Image (cartoon, rainbow, N blue to C red; front, side, top):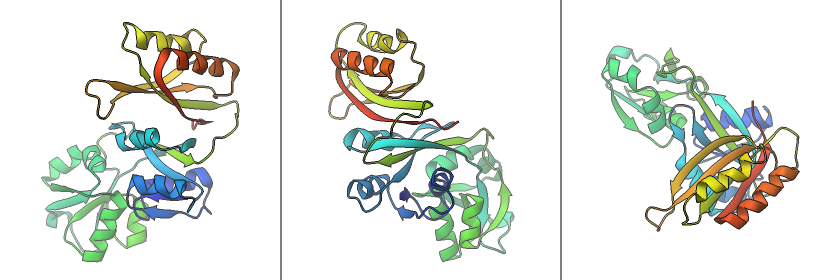
Length: 267
């Protein structure tokens, strides 16, 4: 399976959580490369972040789900515990600059401001740790404790995120769907027609069947200003009777609908 980032990335941790410690994982530089590797059958599965409890949805993931034929086969929720990493022998007083992924920098903004450190965004948390180790920089990196172990760095401080309830939800991607388990979630995307109350009517197809909505978010439709796709998660599997009925009704009342996947929920 493939994940975005370098060894020690939180995506790799999510893969281990979902597939077990013996999973063979391959790092890719971008989300698009993860999707492509599954589509081209160089790996069976991919894993990508979908949303963070502090920073919200990962928009690129949802855009790629809309553009490709891949299905969500599962989800994993990882407690994100950021650490300040340095090359051994570097003190906190010597630091002027810290590298990491933009979301990690945002999640640790209060801590970094107190130290008066300049922030430089990189493409990956673990990638910033790898770069620090290779270049032996007198700088800091925000990444996981496992990244420090992999690249031989020192952890100056653990748990530097501003809010401790920091979780990231990951999607497991595959080329086919999975059968019902009795404890499932379904993700869809749809666009409404240009009529009054169209969104209300669409959501009413779920509410009238007592289907529990767990997420709704709008994203602009590219190339069509001021029009939106709605990404929706709800409990149940697409092959459950009432969910199947709701999806059938939604297809008739929306301009476009795509099922992104039905998969076991992660508690």
